[in-house]
Image (spheres, rainbow, N blue to C red):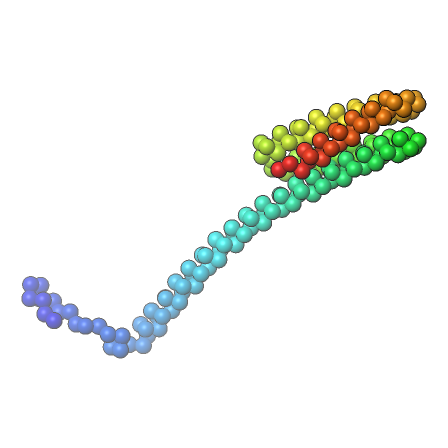
Length: 173
């Protein structure tokens, strides 16, 4: 085909008319581009999976801390039952152990994670309830040690209500 205005000629190029070496180079470039695109997609995907894994690890840490808080509340409830059965010293010791576990294995572990504002409010509520629970339990143990079973029974009921509130607060999302 002739182009009369510029004096240039353009011939039809076919693959069969090209030498082998440029064909191999072209094939290599195409394969390299495909490998590069596949690598880029893989790299991005691994980064996304890593981000999700980090989020799951943080959530697992929070769930573990919540389970520890609930277990500590159970120990405290059990301690009150021991005291009601006449084992006041054992009950006080168990309550103190449960309180320590609630703080160190529960609240402190939960707070060490990255918390949302809702979770910070939840922990603040649980700390308030736990402080109130500690006060009611102290009054219970004093009444039980003094032999004032009526007051001890009243405080045991208050403590049971508070422990139910604490457990509910611990499992709220």
